[in-house]
Length: 195
Image 1: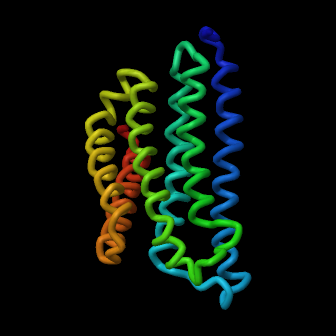
Image 2: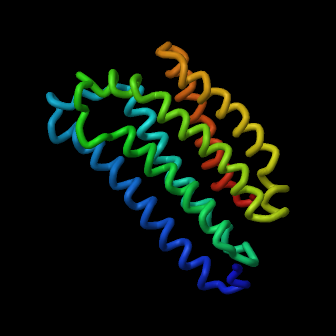
Image 3: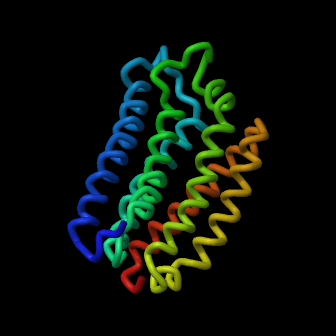
């Protein structure tokens, strides 16, 4: 079943994406606030906070880039489902970063290292979904970002696979910095008026 070229369909999809991303951002912000509200109970860990900040930035970048979905001529349920699954990955990462309770884990550092296979597995899957999302946006968009997007997906996906398996803090710190540099690259691209 297709909906044809109806601009209202994209508006409908944006509303659903906005709800999911709104929950994601709210989860991250309330998680950051815990460190201010109860600093003794919730001691910050730079690596955990760095990935939370990167995920927040990822939500912001995702929302901005998705405006190009308006160029999709014909929407189907499967395209809608693909976009919704991709968007939902951010929510899952946010919930993993800031659970309701730490439970048996004594700190966010211990919790983050214990849950790293889930977090980095979902992050790796988001890079795969991003490549599909790029192709959904049409040939002009693929020509604009395709090579860079593909290289980023390959490098970051490989980094996620390593991060799932290692507890080495040097690797995790370097991988976080690489991720933030990549996000800053995309922000610079957005600020470039010739793009």
